[in-house]
Image (cartoon, rainbow, N blue to C red):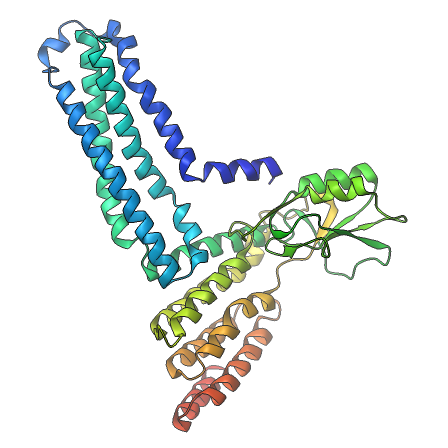
Length: 419
């Protein structure tokens, strides 16, 4: 994805953008009635009681203002609940949720529609036929508001709950992982060999997490300068002026202009993003589980839920061959990048849960079941990695469990499922 397309997508995913679009449409929609009234048959306004349109718009304006304020306060409370009960990193998914954006934009747009309609009526903008058109439009807006409210009530019942938030993180992580498996190196060549000896580092000129890499820009730079670029800073990596974002093949020291051009291809921010960084999603899931296992919360059920979600996310690796067929040839011929490491993704999610749940038999039973399931994945070293983490988790359980019978129960389960 190009740099500007990424920025545009980021802008359009914000709440103010959809609210602004709905607001602009709401301003002009009532005024359209004055323009189309000439096309309405003269007898229609007599057949429909349109005298009450003024009072209907007044009721709609007052109710929509109240509903908008109530919805905003409910969402803020849900964000606060997610921050305290789940993890602050998960609230970004709630804030960027399209359902809440559309609902609030509908309520705000309906309010603006009503205010503009009332003002136009008081200003004598409409004739009889114009009032009829406005009446029809108002009925349409009311129908849209009712449908949105019905969906919004169901949505608010789940907003901010721990289980619902875990499912959101799981969906976002699975989507990001599928995208990476379709294009393991983001459209570049997969780097599966050591860097050339002539490779020279390009250091970052910003401080923050890499959110997006414009591979097309890097490819153009490489072609213009007759070089190869090896990306070192994957999405999610924290960079600074002491960290190399890339390496280039060059016989001479890279110029500052070249280094600046390469750095412009890396979009950074203070926080990581779910969109190109599936490891971030697993890290957030791990935070949820670790918080649930803390003495203050003591909720092993949530940790088990996270373990099951992690299994479903990592099971996406089973489809790696099928997904890779959708993008078989590298699009960017002069750029190289390593693919995602399954071992690294295990490290993001399982060791902290095994550590903090060391004394809980049920958590470790589900961990061993998870490792057994993942060991059967059709992916390089899947069995080896799963067994290594199974052994490590069992060692933590041996140290953490006070009752020897629990250790023996877990040991027997481990032996049975890995036969």
